[in-house]
Amino acid sequence: MSKHLVVALAYDRLCTFEFGCVAEVFALDRPELGVDWYRFAVCAVDRGPLRAAGGISVTVPYTPKLLDHATTIVVPGWRDADEIPPEPLLQKLRAAHRRGVRLCSICSGVFVLAAAGVLDGKKVTTHWRYAEELQRRYPQLRVQSDALYIDEGQIITAAGSAAGLDMLLHLVRRDFGGTVANRVAQRLVVQPHRDGGQAQFVPRPMPSDESGRLVKLMDWVRQNPALPHTLRSLAERAAMSPRTLQRQFHDATGMAPYAWLVHERVAVAREMLESQAPLPVGRIAELAGFGSEESMRRHFRRIALTSPAAYREKFGYGAKAPKAALTPCAE
Image (cartoon, rainbow, N blue to C red; front, side, top):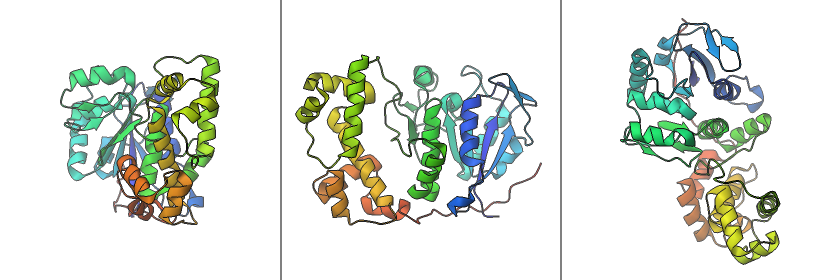
């Protein structure tokens, strides 16, 4: 059978929300997508039944032997960042890494991958509460505490809770293209794409009146990306001073207004490149507000790490990445 097998770890004191996100994305049948969807299974790190957050118990049919057949492994959190995972599990993860299996973590799950030694030298992220401890304990890692998720190719790490959904949809986008990922997001009723580099949290709460004005401004800009926005014009529309607008943008997004605007324009360009009715790159540059193809290509490559043409080829309507062949075991 030539289906991609995603295996999620389950453990005693399971993080219910993170695990639920993984199951929601990968475990449901999705015949409406018309693609060779994933196979999904769960393996238990501990003997069951397993306790889970919320006072429930979980019974899991597979042991870690199933990891020998996975093509993607997801660690949905870990019960205690200070607890070293069982050595047999770490050995399975090291072997999977050597085989080229894709390894993913959500929130504190990064401590499991770090303990296995598969993250050395990599850029990684986790929930901001754990970032300092992760860096202290594993100085060989390049911890980025303000990212939603980081894709290092074979290794993908996500921050806490809802950022896991962003990472999981990113994986679907990598495997099946943007159109399929957007339809999955629509079914989940979540935003189809958030850049991994977006700030995890607002450092300090904004006053409600300023927050409301900023949100309205951001929504308006998203609807009108092609207009010649400047700091002064945005500040006037939000009824703020340019200095206040800069501060509010940084607090809300971790970016200056111009940097945020460029990211939004790249997001608009991505959607157009994924469209079923493709437009010429020059027209996309105009509609997204870049002004020229050269400007769009420069910003697109810097943020999306690829060219518009390569992105369209990989994620455009009908594009689909090949799946690895495997024969999952039944234990």
